[in-house]
Amino acid sequence: MEGKRQNPETYYLAVLFITAIAAIFYGILWTSKTIDYEAVIQQNIPGVTSIEKMIGAQRAYQVDAAGKKYYAVCDSAVGYQSRIEAMTIVNQEGLVEKVIITQQGETPIFFERLYTRKLFDQFKNLSVKEPVYLGGASGYSGYLNERQTNNYIDRVTGSTVSSHAVAEAVNKGTAYIASKCFNTRWSNPYDGYQFNRQDLAMMMIYIIALATAFIKKLVRLRIWILLASFGIMGFFVKKFVAASNLFSLITLQIPGLTNLGWYVLIGGTLGFIVLLGKNIYCAWICPFGAAQEVINKAAGFKSLGISPQVTKKLKLAAPTILWVAIMLGTFLGDYGTLDYQPF
Image 1 (cartoon, rainbow, N blue to C red):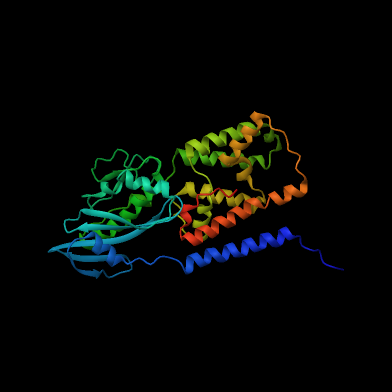
Image 2 (cartoon, rainbow, N blue to C red):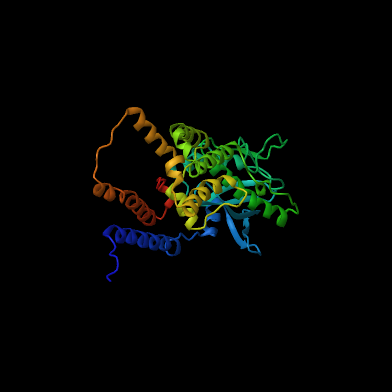
């Protein structure tokens, strides 16, 4: 008996999948940028006469320049969609001279805010002998809260996650320099769990969406659930699943378990698909999809009567656009520029 013949769409999707995975691994293994850290040090410390790598696994250097001693240390933390690496330069008094970002793949428009709003200038003259806290970031690890200290920076509104990642990376580095060079040890506040109101609200939306898979009567409340998702995910939480999030997952740029919100967003979305075989995120959570459906119902648009054959072809548009996004990310060498919503 002749086996069942696969339709062309199946072969097409298989080709997209295989070439996309190949492109991602090519981007990871062969096009990654090599950083000349000693050159970065020379560009940011005037009059360098010697640079000596400090003993240990940490990327840290002792620098002599113009009769003074400096220390340069690199460490990283995961931001909204990428790992952010920061080099912190410390003077011989134990004060931060400068913070330089050596690698990052955040969405450009959001990360640029850190420069335009002078986040990095705030690190100047902060001490490595205590943590650098983050002001205005309630619910995040490292939050200043009511601590009586001047050793803090203020987060950049609209780029809180990236601000937090930079502060965390700097703290990892300064903790190392403090212990190795200034005989000072302190507990890193960024190692604590963070759980804020936005994370709680997002978790509630995911629980309600999960309930719709088992409680069919909730379909009657669909329009209200969509409105809640639109308001909470789009305006309060301000987080959604983008292609760059998936790329960061594939490339293992994953935050620690202390970042519970990230695991709710990404783990919950993919978990629904794997465990239930349903894309619940797209149907019940996505703020863009919710806005489209609510507008469609409010406007009273009627079905266009598109044939099943045409509908079947149109369903190939989403994976095709995602494939194009992956190829562009590989070509540009920066998946962070592709803040594209794949669902």
